[in-house]
Every structure is written in C-alpha cells, then in structure tokens.
Length: 367
Image (cartoon, rainbow, N blue to C red; front, side, top):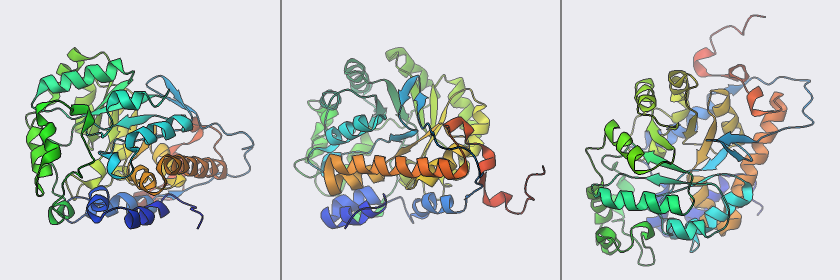
C-alpha cells in the first residue's frame, strides 16, 4: 500500500515496534488531553484562500539563525531513536540533510554528536537538558561545538519528568542494544542497566530542578553558540527569555508529555509571537501532521515548525527513506497549501489567511 500522508506511518510503527517502545514514543502525560488537543486544535483553524494570483513560481526557502534552509519544516529532538531503527539518529541526520533542513539532536541520543556529524554535511542543533552534573553538560556542549553543531536548544519545561502512565504500566527500560551515546563513559551511563520501570526516575534524578533564567546566562558563558529556548507557552516567559538573551523561542509543550491540560501549542502561538514583537524568531512544535498545519502556524506568526513523532514513526517503518518521505510529503502539501491560498513566498503568508475559532463570530474584514 502506498503511503499518502504522514499519519499513516504511525500505524505501521505500532505494528513493527515492541509495545514498550511504541508506547514510549506515542504516549503523553496523565489523561493525554493535551496530546489529543495538539492535533485537534489545528482542525479548528480554517483557511481564507485568495484566488487568481499567479502562483507559477513558489519559494519555500527561509533562513533560521542566518542558515538558509529549503523549507520552514525542521526536525525536533526525539530521544533514543535506535529503539525505532538500528540506524537511529544517523539515518534521521541523513534524511534532514537530503531535504536541506535542520535536525535537532536529543541529549538522550543513541548515536553521539560526533557520529551524527559524520553522517555528512548538514545544519544541526543540539537539544540540551541541564543536569546536576554541570561538568557533563559543559563537556557535551563543547563536543557539539567541535562537531560543527550550530545552536543549542535548551529544553526548559522539564525540571521534573511528566507522568506517562504507559511507561509505568510497561515498566519501561532501555533495550540492551540502546546506549545513551552522548554520555558514554560518564558515571550515569549506568542508566542503561536500570531494571524495572526505574529508567524514568533515574533520568529524572539527573535533571537540575533548580534550573532557572540565570542558568541561561551561565550557558552563554560556556558557549558562543546561539541559544534557543524550548518550552515557552506564555507571553510572560517570552519576555523573560528575550531579557535572558536567547536567539529564538520554540513554543512547545514537550509533545504533551510533561504537564497535561496545557493548551495546544498552536493555540498559544499568537500570544508568544505578540510578546516577542519581532525581537527573536518564534517556532512551534506539537501536532504538525499536514502541510496545512505548517501553513496555519506560519500565518499565526511562526518562523518555522519542528516535527517529532512523525520522524520516529517513519524511521521505525522505513528507516532513512521513511524520514525522507515524511519531509517530502509535508513539503509538497505545504507548497500546495501556499499555491491554493495564493502565496508565492513565506512572507506572503499573513494573519488574514486564517480564521481562528475565536474570530468566527466576527464579521469578515471590512474592505
């Protein structure tokens, strides 16, 4: 059966992967309300296409932190990709490079930053958890710099780990063939050997729960790479992030894996964009499955989007080729959405191209 959309990979992954692994990737926190809402919210935003515009030439290119990429669709950090496919993050890096876009490597990667860099040319960011062991953090940042990574994506929504009941039920542990390669040789590589469902609590014990805005300043003292903060959901934190000197913001609820009953990211995007006032680019992750989702995010002010689960599911299904296909399908759908809405470049996608649920009652803009 030919795969015609991104969502179809999930069912294939569910069939191929052990239940414990599939559930780890697929599940969200608590009641999983936010997990469903991340998707559902997109369906409540409607498009306002403009007609009879010459769309014979469409340009999807953009720049992120000064790096030119082929489209505003990038790869979010997802942990332990070797559980999905033997080539894990290495395959994902190759697929991102082939698509001309950015890959974000998770701290909890199963290939090291150096191994991923060896996959060939490409623009790569390192996602960072700040651990109690600051020396380990500093070492990893330096290694990423030396391996040619271009930015640090600081995950800021995880002083503690969200409660994912599927992992508790499955007594989630790392399969024996999986190693946390960015931390090999460090004390807490013992995580690989954890028994029972203790993996999550062991990892949680490594996180620095005192992490605060001052630590963003500390990070700037150990690296010259730009820092993007991931996990912003409010205008208040947008202001604090900008005051702390970040180079970008990712509106993210951690794939609905941390705190349940936070809004879908697409619902708070505009609040963050308005708070940023153009001072730094604002990106979004969470729930992107269609080209129209990408279009809606850009219309509401995002500079680009990141995809997470579609990557691990397509990786599980077809390896590197699967990830390439996901990026290709999203790109093609997004280009089609642009053409049918009368937009020839990203700057032509405006707020007037979408109608949100809170505007439905409002009369159409007066001419």
